[in-house]
Amino acid sequence: MASGEYRISIERTKIAKLTESQSLLTAEKSATEDPVAALVFAQAQHLVEAKDIIYVFENNNVALRE
Image 1 (cartoon, rainbow, N blue to C red):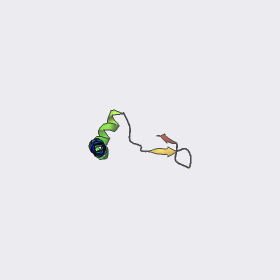
Image 2: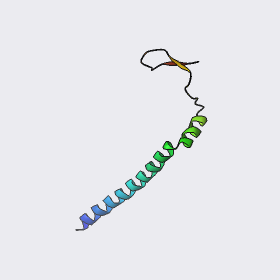
Image 3: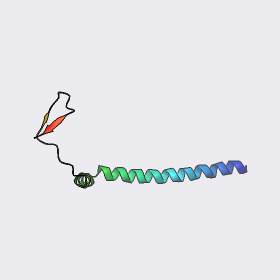
Image 4: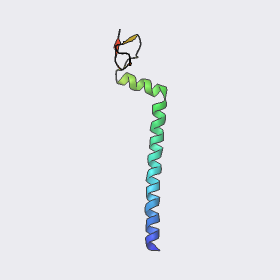
């Protein structure tokens, strides 16, 4: 009986940690789906909008910026 209760306690602890992890991941996912957050990230990384490009190969894997 004691070992069963111990295992239940361990599993409850695991559930609590996983629930916390899920909450953090959900918040992180929401932040990445926010267009404003994406824009802030792009600006911080000095990314530029892909426009006026010419594809070098037909499979569109390589492009030149004009």
